[in-house]
Length: 491
Ligand code: NAI
Ligand code: MG
Image (tube, rainbow, N blue to C red; front, side):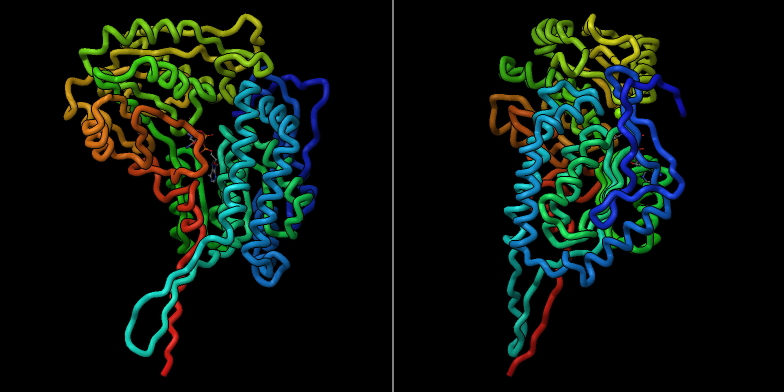
């Protein structure tokens, strides 16, 4: 779908593709317009990289990994570079936040938090780089055996548009910490902060080829990267549809992959929940980034006895929410693109047509430009269990509230989607909290809390259609490395 948007007074030109620490122009000269979702105007262009650029990037990474300056650095030196990049991100935080806010439509305070999180990724893995210790394995008499974690080689990373700054940190920092050389394909819908952060990586002192970036369309640059025989591993965050294509391509090349494919994450509220604590978290978990978060708290499961007490209070909060311009720090910004806005609105229209009751709806701020892609937040309920809103990822500010009877029913309902990424359990009964937390199928479960996004230290990933493998935390260092067993015979 190509939609034409008016151009802003100044349009930042495409930088090209980033290979061997330099921007290189595209032979084809093709570019992709970058739209500011809050305004509906084109304000920048990025290069439309393709198979040729991906091949050049993979070759540069291969050279860096095999004998290049990058391959000769110690773990401590790699860690120092990562930490320095984290520092440079912080030093340039205001510029990066403004860029992220315009590119994604995020409220400025959210964009600032995202930049700090991006820095945290590089700091965390900078500190961790030289702390991945090996092991000694007892074996037969006369043998000395060790297990050592080594880099995989050239790792490919395809990231989405919802958190570009955080995602470059989450994707590249652990891979680089382990000594891999990387090729990144950022999302065509928003990738200006990653393109700026790689420039800072040169300033930080990364040798050429360690980080290469090919902006472009998914079906071109993304497909070329995932299918390239020169990569040793691929990490993908995005839709389940593309996730299948990534895993199929990985299978063809006999390489591994980590997939993070979103969710329909439940927050389970028992009748003894602390509502004062829960209410702002429930709202925040679906409104954060306008609901465009893989781990958004998109389903609210409420014990029947609590429903009448909870809903008026939640309705009041939802009705007060405003979607508006990033610079005005509204409750939420716009949806990323006209296409995604139409997709979110289709979910809402369908639910309304099917007679699912609307409990409350926020509004578009009066100052929000007509041409922006705003969708006021809405809470539906009670949503029937088989309804699309109860099952499918909307990726917008749409909360599906549902009723459960007892603990058994709560667990069944929580597990009644194809996804399994994050869950929240709210109760003052700690035994119940633990019982439920252990039975909910998800990669992360929060008790009396919920974290959509944050938590660099916390291993993150899904089960079922949400994907497999773990990123973030120390786990990511294992994901981006392989264990080599060394067997030494002695007298
Ligand atoms: P997408 O899966 O198409 O995009 C994610 C990334 O994959 C982008 O960098 C894109 O360029 C790339 N890509 C697209 N087609 C590709 C291909 N054939 N080969 C390799 N890479 C490819 O997601 P899209 O269309 O932007 O959003 C659709 C839905 O996906 C959303 O409504 C949401 O439900 C889900 N999604 C989930 C995300 C998450 O954080 N788990 C992030 C973005 C989208
Ligand atoms: Mg954009």
